Image (tube, rainbow, N blue to C red; front, side, top):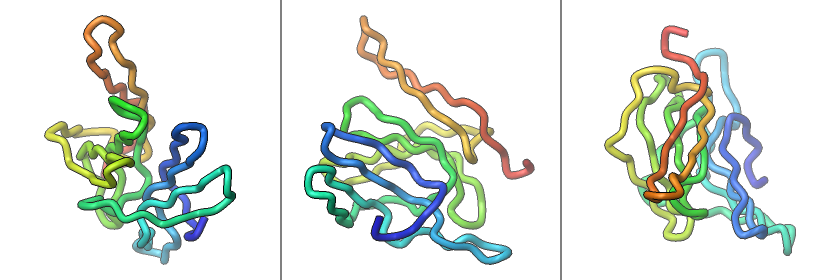
Length: 138
């Protein structure tokens, strides 16, 4: 990667690209330093990394992530902005390079959680499942 990091999201698309989003690049005793370049893409055919700018993307670390309605949508839930835990669900369109905050909020288990999506075969509706995590009080 172009920026060393931990607590980030990674998702593979089209068996060609690996997208890496967010995370922490270093920390001091009180506050982590979030990655400046939010999204990087690894091209497995050329063995090259590139940095992409995502419009309106938040800086976050230690969040849950999963794929969304299509293979180019990355869903991010919660995490930390470096000082407080967040309870927002973000959608990042990796094709259009745009992020948007959804109107869905979670009041608990928003840090270091795990997510999974399942699409209903009849209705096509996407169901988001949240597992584990932590609150600001631990």
